[in-house]
Length: 255
Ligand code: NAP
Image (cartoon, rainbow, N blue to C red; front, side, top):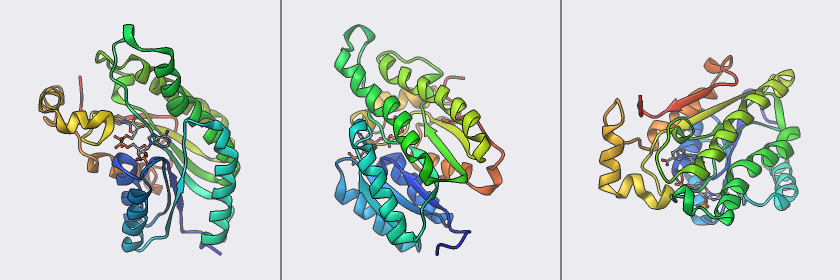
């Protein structure tokens, strides 16, 4: 049997970027991790190896968070994995992180752009969390990843930001309804971070990077290491009484 003290996290979209960084930060804090990937299987496997090198258990599962039809099958895979690898039926922490960007003016955003973002960022988060609920321990935690863009407005992000706004409202409702199971639910809202996100725009476009730095109190764009540790520390015992909050991790953008 898994010892009571060993926590298990499931982080969606952990093959790259912020999800990968979160998975590694959790492992460094002694948490075992199930990482999910969409298309980057090799990257996900190397995240699993890196977690194992830290001394924690890990496994990778394929998941498209934009396709609710496959969620029952995914949940069955999670259950089987928990049984085989951890001899347990439930995990402790769910981090809803997977996502894509879209930079398009409101006037040019198509219905299919909107649907794609909605399926991945809002409908997917809603129903994946619902279907995983029986597999989350009482006393567990959920972190939903939003964005600074749900608070401030930068042109060309309306559809994306609307979904993140929805996720922030969902966080509060989940916190209310899951309180009876002692499950705390919070939002982490990163600022602009240097990852592959949106074609690597914040990392690779110097003009964009300089603009972000100029609008950030701490004077630079964010890097993945600014986020993973924040999520891992939110999931630590020290932060167990933090519930239903939106915590922006942006170095102080657009104050
Ligand atoms: P990233 O480097 O592009 O990584 C995205 C991750 O999500 C990858 O692991 C990818 O998996 C996965 N993914 C993409 N589409 C998916 C789908 N349909 N189903 C399942 N997984 C999918 O992006 P990131 O910067 O780490 O972003 C992570 C989260 O932070 C997103 O929710 C994003 O909205 C949010 N965020 C990012 C920033 C930023 O500036 N970077 C700022 C605020 C919020 P594969 O590689 O396997 O396909």
